[in-house]
Amino acid sequence: MLMTAADYRDSLRSLKPRVFVEGQRVESVADEPKLIPGINAVGVSYDLAQVAELKPIMTATQHSSGKTINRMMHIDQSGDDLLNKLEAVRFMCKISGCGQRYLTHDGFNGVYQATKLADDRHGTDYHQRFVAYMHDAQDRDLAIGIAMTDAKGDRSLKPSQQTNPDTYVHIKERRKDGIVISGTKAIVTGAAYMHEFLLMPCRTHTPEDADCAVCCAVPIDAEGVTVISRRAGRPGEAAAKFSAKYGQGTGVVQFADVFVPWDKVFMAGETEEAGYLTTSYASHHRQSCIGARAGFGDLLIGAGAHMYEANGLDADKHSHIREQMVELIKIVEGFFACGVASSVYCVKDTSGVAMPDPVFSNIGKLLLATQIYDMHKIAHYVSGGLIVALPGPDEDHNPETAASLSAVLGARADIPYQQRADVARFVEDLTVSDQAGWYSVMSLHGGGSPEAMKREIWRNYPVDEKKDLVSSLLDHGVLDMGQRVSKQPGRCCVTGCQVPELPGTDARTTKQLEAVEVR
Ligand SMILES: Cc1cc2nc3c(=O)[nH]c(=O)nc-3n(C[C@H](O)[C@H](O)[C@H](O)COP(=O)(O)OP(=O)(O)OC[C@H]3O[C@@H](n4cnc5c(N)ncnc54)[C@H](O)[C@@H]3O)c2cc1C
Image (cartoon, rainbow, N blue to C red; front, side, top):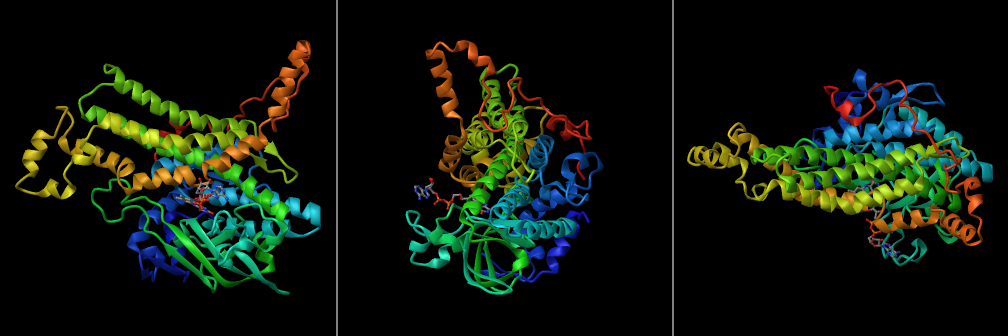
């Protein structure tokens, strides 16, 4: 059953997790003010799936069950699916800043692929266990936190060389009925307000560290699980025009002797396939990050335009403002185009999952990771200093200053002062406040540090093909060129690929989707 945001919030009330926020034990996650912006943001993924016009992108038919599910839990079968997911994530994130639930999608697809590979190679039955778990989670429309990044300890050492073994989640005991795990996942998006965690390894492990090659599902309120969360957004701050409503709280999740029954264990020591899980997840997740940050870019483009207008400027007349806005558009649509390309050139493995082309997916994520700082700079450039200098919202109601401030701090005659002040605070919230730094670091490191992307680009890019190309030219083999078939995965024919239609919807572009009213 597809839940609404209200259902989701209610469903959290039936859980009894051990959660701390800012030094305090939380009695009811759903009612904790410090977490509400995060719960609101995840709620957007639920409510959008209820909007009739958005169903083609926000819901999907799960091929293995025939059921209609939230797209944030769907296994992709085609480039169309990947494009729809990309649009869905962008749409979700331009409303919520970061809709968070796309991590579930990325984790599901990675585990679906890797469990099939493990079974094919080792005769295990992980895949059917995972599919059963996934169908149940889809039926219950759960929010599932992706717990991948271990605490990792000394980065130069492997897990077995660490002084404290709990810097990595590892299997401590193998029993007849399941496994016992211990360790720490250091950064989990939305940890406090998830129903369950899907644990996955964060790196490729060597055979000595096979016990860290573990993938399993654990309910948030399982015995031995503790979530230590940050607050989400800027709850209760009047100046936080966006982040008082929407934000993201990450959490450290500690697992202390947590028992996991075998039917919830999807990998237990298969280091190679666990490595494949890590890289497959990364390709899915980096493509989702592209959609997410494009949604954030939509917010900055809109806010920048509001701000220069409120300042009395016209981008058609003032070329340096226009030039900066075009630069911002180029950045956002440039990395988004990599997301589109990674969908069109998707690759399929034996599991039948359509995986984003890893080269384009990693390039798009690398672009947004570094260009997020330029995005903020452009918003500052077109806005002016008011975004950091405007007196706080309390002054709006001060009988001694409010009238005179509004008389002199207005700019364009037909735009009221309050509107200029609101948009200045909106830009401040997203590009200057602690949330701005948060969006930057999330863009830089979320989904893997830039070095991880560079490694994947290098691993997957057909450099040898380019070498052969030049060799063939040097060998006078110019006429052979037309018969060459690219070795880059997904580039399967010399005629090139066609952009697939988005199925079942004429709402093809984000622009058109914007017109759809969101309840
Ligand atoms: C807002 C946010 C949300 C996130 N959400 C999630 C989530 O939901 N689930 C999840 O699992 N993870 C999540 N992450 C974690 C994210 O995947 C990691 O931040 C990322 O993989 C980098 O790991 P790290 O933070 O431990 O940094 P580090 O790995 O310590 O990297 C710091 C720097 O050191 C370098 N470095 C690290 N190790 C080595 C080495 N051995 N040799 C040489 N150089 C090295 C890196 O390249 C990088 O430049 C999130 C991160 C953020 C910021």
